[in-house]
Image (tube, rainbow, N blue to C red; front, side, top):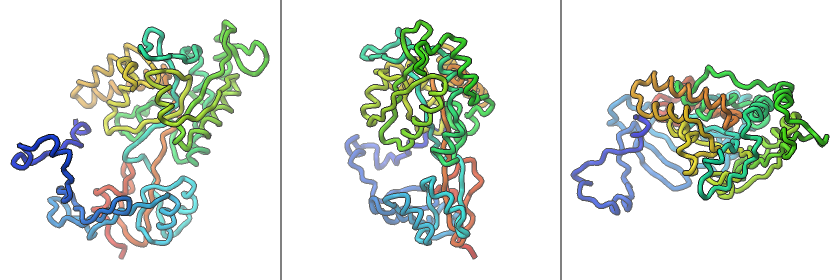
Length: 392
């Protein structure tokens, strides 16, 4: 319930009771009234936000006088500002900068799950013919509907290699759409498909997917279609081409070919859902504090709405989703959500290559007391800013 209420605000009825909807739209909120440990003192769009400490705060008053949240045009400039002491802490950086900052005696790196966890996914087009939306094209390769093929692809996906090369080691292997940053709702007991080319090849051999003409690409058991899949990714996804290249190499070792093409986000959306005019897509989701939305993506009801990317349909999963939506006991709801993740990993509508970690850094010679041992890393959060004090 908390995650559904955090963006709803209590308004004074004597000021807003008679206002129209248009008045709310036109309201500029210049004074930015709030009740937190800091209050807005100055704001310049795309430049900075200056916060002053709220001396009337009902909790522990911060030990600093305030904070300036500076905007930088690119991450390299941000890293340089930290190294020179222009700023005291940075909330993001390119992974390529980690090694240099780690060797700086005045800088401490903090690595962990992000405050707003996201998930990268490899999506299979599984929409059943009887579930194809009225305006859908549903042109997915029929072999992808075979769980054996998807298992072979999972065994031929080297997640650690993807983490090492794409994220420079700053990630953890993925399992389901629910990222590890969601704490108790993430099922950490699941057993992943081990990277094993021999196992992947045996699965396909035993299922009758042979390379009939000797061109290095397997065909379907009836010999009618080669296992050649379209592999797309969003053009604004910087990691997309590298992920696709690495998948192409390991999947090629089991006789599966991919035709790689990046598409701009609008085009990718138009071929994805609910058109289902694709084979495999590399993309991703951001996550709410609660797993309900990401769980809903895999329900049958969302196939015609455009929210389902994969067209996955499983009545057992749908029933569990309905149950968790009304379960008020947190532990029982967690058990339902864990079971849903186990089903999704078993049925493989997605391969989740990794969960990226958040990397932040601060100068040890300026301020101390940052929260660095939380389950989520967010040095900019008021909970951390309220505790820091100058280094003596």
